[in-house]
Length: 302
Image (cartoon, rainbow, N blue to C red):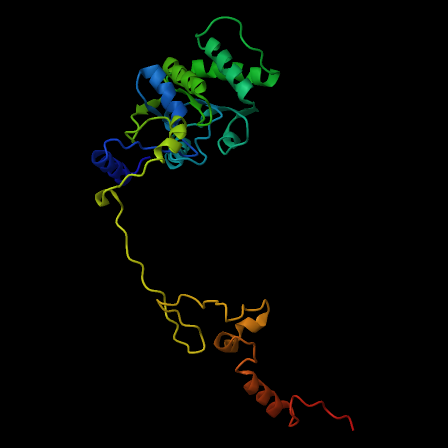
């Protein structure tokens, strides 16, 4: 949550209701990056990569150019890099195609298990970790080996970005790798003061709804009075009024049939179907222009 107005209202609600428990849930959250930063730095932080200053970029199921709150900023940094310096050397390991994946030099499709194994191999190549390494598919192994070589060669200008869908362990590896590589990346504090995990707050939802509380009016958004319904000027149209929003159906009035007869004004006045009020005018018009014989009489052939 980044709205200053909403954050101020929540602060006012907490002041008025000390025992209030705020539960928030969104389909996209920052739980994994915040937890990884808390484990690495001791406090929740959010990474802000500087794509314009990176020469080599490794995307771990990340899509910085795709949809997201930082899409505009990343696109601008990307375009600044293209105008002022040679293009990045881009590697991507992702499970499904993305906009950023279509722009990279080398891309390899990999599931969650292979991506986690690739992180172990990369950690060993960058000087961390020990013990036996997992086995990777041949194509993924070649990409990881070449990416590790280029990342170490571009020390200070190399960047590793983990995707939002990745777990805490992958984000922790990305934070460690960027620290080893002295990556062009900034860390900022979350805008929202409430950094509690949204997933952990979900089980609290049933218990928070069991007791009703009264919220002061000062904590609520101002409301506007709605204008009255419009009144139609034509006499042949139904006019809406505050006391009668639409024709009511009673026990003494028949239900409109499922054909065009219900559109007749005669039905709404008397409850029976009848001819359209303009029907006599139409018949007179046809009879006067086409033939002098009335329209309801058959023509004689003799």
